[in-house]
Length: 98
Image (cartoon, rainbow, N blue to C red; front, side):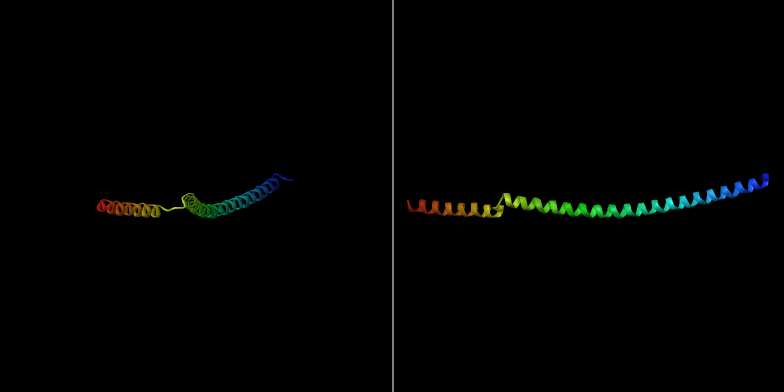
């Protein structure tokens, strides 16, 4: 094999290697692009799940608060006002009857 044929053979071999490397580089870029897209989709889904979990946690806190305090503050306030009015009425009648 002559030196010129060997150089041509090496050049074609280098061209093949370069072609394979460029194909590999394109494949890696494609995978990375798809990975970035998948990562964005995954992040969106995770944030949606987090929002749902936060709303569920808030509703559970409300439910727990309602279960621990069966009487609302309005009912208690109305009861206190009612008893104060009743006490004032009884006291007023007692004072005028004496």
